[in-house]
Picture 1 (cartoon, rainbow, N blue to C red):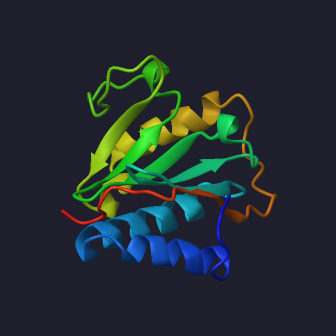
Picture 2 (cartoon, rainbow, N blue to C red; picture 1 turned 45 degrees about the horizontal axis):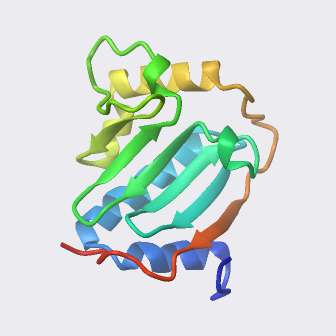
Length: 153
């Protein structure tokens, strides 16, 4: 459960403020870009032990999330939650898991590169439950871990 410390947007801002300003800046800008690009997406925030994660999906069900931004002490990553099945001719995706692949974001503008845009397009097209652009997605704080690793290197 989460401890109420203001609106979800204020809580997310507080979570991001714990990180190095450069990493937090990349994460904030990436979240803004994805919010604009993924119209209708619900944003699910998990301030976990290892990282801060913001999932984007068609509903409040974490299992339906399509992509997420995860923030670590030294970087932010874009995770494709069904990334193993995406065509990746530019070999941008990293990871060896059974489903998930990711891209480390050096800057938020990485989201605007043709390769990343193509991966996002595929992920949206292949989503089990599509986004409804007419839906007004909300930001929800889903979990805050009581114990967390340090947020700065």
